[in-house]
Length: 107
Image 1 (cartoon, rainbow, N blue to C red):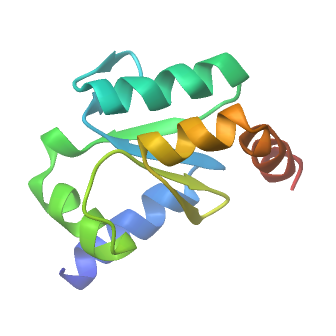
Image 2 (image 1 turned 90 degrees about the horizontal axis):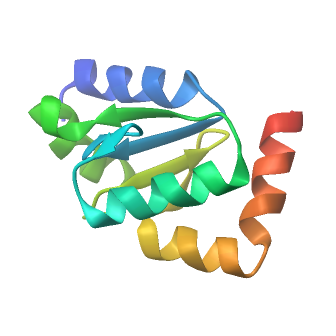
């Protein structure tokens, strides 16, 4: 990954308390896993931003190296990598995600 791509990813993650790298965007997810993450965050009613990895091949590959995680979507809360669709669903169902989001938004 180039230093420029790393900086771009750093800046995107820092731009919002909750940031999602996904296929498509929050209004039009382009895969089922990305849609699952959007639905969870929408149910929580929290503000979040997204980046469409399909629109930027450097980000699409770079984010996998950045997080050392092979799949998309990828969710960051307060700059920390949380996981993808399955992890988000698990955290949502056991109540941990709500707590993480509240802490992030309060900080």
